[in-house]
Image (cartoon, rainbow, N blue to C red; front, side, top):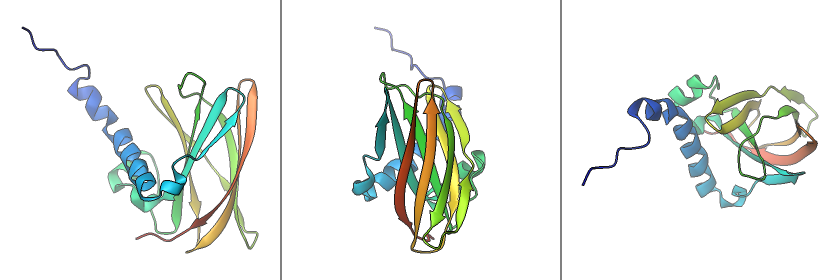
Length: 157
């Protein structure tokens, strides 16, 4: 009997490690906050998945690799758009965040593509225990949506 060779080479695995670490951080956060487990909005034949987590949840080397500035006063907004087959699709995103005092900041999304996975990342600056109203316009070929959410953001160590 011959041994089966692994499908992924060591080089390919090393290239995926940062994305895997980011995914693990998000999954750990979801596990600790089960109320946020299904943050998704359907539009047309697509699903927009979203999560907002403290940037301090990310390991420094992972944050640096994706150009994310970590800080207790910064949250990461992670958006992905999935088609009806479960594949990630490219989208055009614009957005803003506003606290209850009316202080508004635009969200600048950067696209991360790794294989079939496509993510859009933006950071939000906030005070401790500050409520933010986040609005994101997303469009893909043939469909668009506006995501509106409100979330209380905390300073994290």
